[in-house]
Image (tube, rainbow, N blue to C red; front, side, top):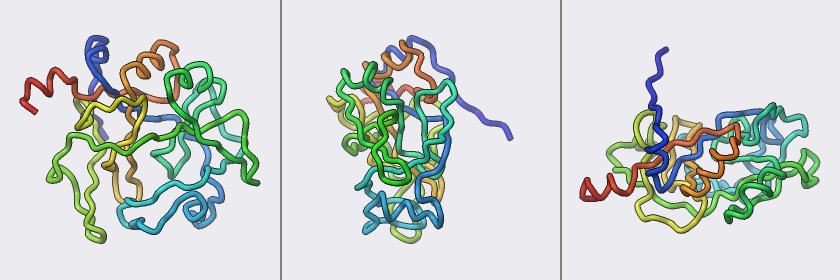
Length: 216
């Protein structure tokens, strides 16, 4: 299977006001994992669609096993949970806390708060510049999800938010495995790249100059 993607130049990164943060290092499963029962524990599922995955709202800390494999990575995602970004507490404190990125607690499988790992607070849900006809409408709930972005600049936010990190109102992916994108400001992206933090890839959003040139 051939995958076509895009490599960006330093100038293209520098010209982007925002970047999508795509966590690529995965280890472990949310607890309890049997029958996906972590969903009922961590989410409000009153508006959740089991077909497309839209509508679940996190209301409790994720629980994980202490045996997660980090390797040389500082960012991590769990299998089955694409939209939650976990990071070592020491890295959050040194590189991200001062930029205004908040954290959420993470618990072990018994419900004890862990001191060495946190979840990055996903921030507000903000829309990206996408047209509904570009997406796929769910036959059950009628909501739209989008194929995961694989080429070119990532869609930019409709408005330029003054927050260091937010998640997209739209979801990307396939049925049962769609997720909100995590988007960070240029300042946060520069800090991640400058410190060489591993486990996530940055994907620059459409530069504001290009949006202005398109008349949007």
